[in-house]
Image 1 (cartoon, rainbow, N blue to C red):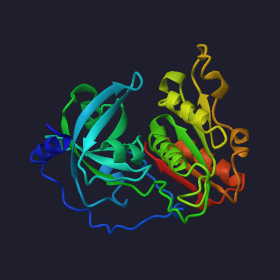
Image 2 (image 1 turned 30 degrees about the vertical axis):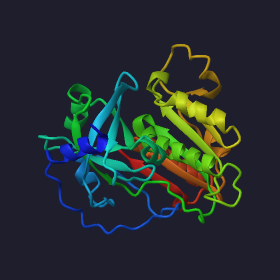
Image 3 (image 1 turned 180 degrees about the horizontal axis):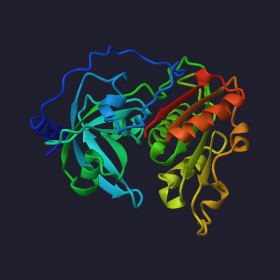
Image 4 (image 1 turned 120 degrees about the vertical axis):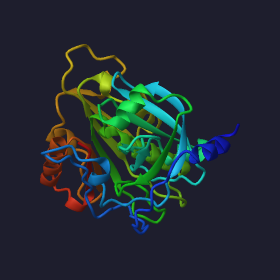
Length: 310
């Protein structure tokens, strides 16, 4: 049976939620806002509460799990076949609806729009928690499980061909890598489409990723990230930071690895107030610290975009 047939069948098992009522509008590369999805100090806010003011698409689309793998000891990576009308921008998240479950999950898409166009699938990387949607993914989700998704979020990179070129600085902490990995892959796809910046398509600047985690095992997508940097050494670069590992580091990773937290010195050489556009995603304390550092380095507030997930 074809994927569209399976998705059509899955649609009948859902009561689709109503439209959000938010009018569709296009954000340009320099989105004039900072996006916050932060938990209350008193209680853990629900995903729908945290994102109530964010843009959402009207449509809720059925999807079917067509791949499951362990990205790390604590993170599962899902591949989902989606409805032909499903679209998203690099950096956006999905409302994740599970049959029979009241709680709605919220997970950033970690794959590129290019993968969706080529294969009709998207990918999510979900860390284990006791929150019901994440717990379901780790303990009950199987191949061919049916779910539904709705795309949302104002945090994305989707330049028009006529937009001015920018140098991307991507700063990730932990599973905050997910939307930034999607953006990095999308930037690489744009460069493949216009390799010489010769008259067609968006003119890509440089892309640098700073990625921090407790140990190398928790650095998600590291091999793929390194491969992109090797494919485009003049355009892409990365620095990995580990904060709690005493074991030796694999030789392959050593050229990219730093011990300790991200520092002002590590950011300084990647900040140009006139050309840098920075996307940040991770724990609130990290975001707040990095934002202050970037401001101190002269990067204007409107060129610092962030999303806090915890």
